[in-house]
Image (cartoon, rainbow, N blue to C red):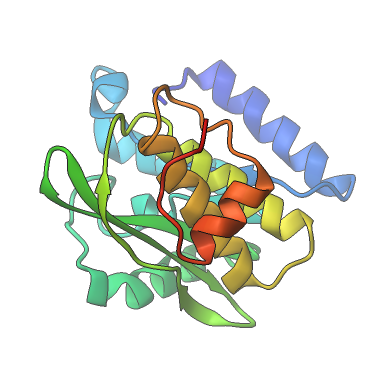
Length: 200
């Protein structure tokens, strides 16, 4: 978001306090050009992201921090491991870096996957879900973050947490609205290979 200096200061202080008290902190750079217009553009966004993400244990949307500045470089799927490793170099205290991976063959059909990095595992690629029939992409990244965080808090390994995130993100964009009201059983079924549509 295009944050004011005061907002950044408050977020910085709150995230630092959360870390001091042993809480797990997540951060999503989620760059939007229109929100940074007149506020320093992508260079200022990068500066803000680096300032805040240094407090994060988990960075979702980590590919947004790769490259010269947000949106500057198109990162191909085969470049993702190196890109996540480069972000890890910028954020040495981060435990997990994660990102969605989307190919767009057409407006209504997306190929969907994800990737994550940790010092313990290196780069892990999530399940591939090709040919998803998209009703609404809005919220799919938030669904991914929620599923990933659920898996991490449940104590699963990174690969399983990534699968939860990938599945919930897929269910979010293939069902009406911007939030998937999916049960854990529906997420598990999708991970096991069922269709990406919440049963009603």
